[in-house]
Image (tube, rainbow, N blue to C red):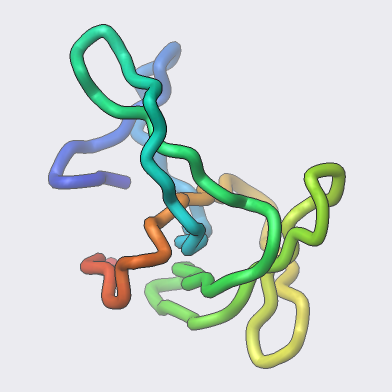
Length: 108
């Protein structure tokens, strides 16, 4: 698993992260006044509501939707009007700015 060409590893074991399933969850993103000591900004991501999702697994991508009605509820993902049941193993959820219409990714 890599972002911007950088491999991601477990912080403790240093093992390469190799999730069986990756979900791109498109959310509303707003700038805030908050940031880190290096000048990076901390955005506010809205994860309550509904929106677009792309599920990557088994070398394929599937366009779907996500839904989370309240802060207290879990998020569900659907494809072709059916709820997606994820396989056993690592699942990585990646929040993507909803303003991005065509994210660039490679499925291997």
